[in-house]
Image (cartoon, rainbow, N blue to C red; front, side, top):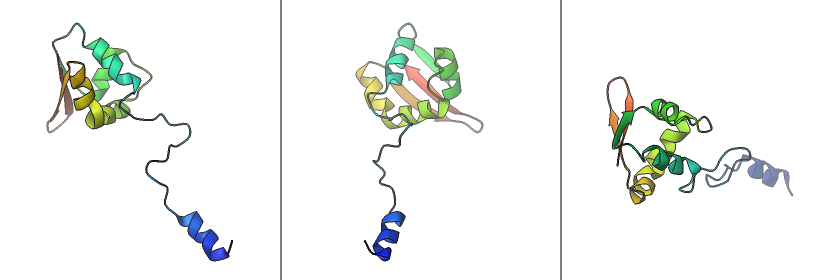
Length: 101
């Protein structure tokens, strides 16, 4: 391999779909959605931040930023199938998540 080809190979950007070792894969099958459905089983409505949701669910395995990403990206479709609607409300001070059954 020529030096120029080697440099080009090294500078090639990482594909977005490439799975990074050691990081969880954020997909529709993520276990967080099942935990949300179980959490909403006995509730009609819940309102709070992503950190509040993690605290109320007693879910220490998913960070708040990951929960927010999952809900934004897949929440409306995945949870709707399970009977839970997701709405995002932004105020001057907080980004709120509203879950309704």
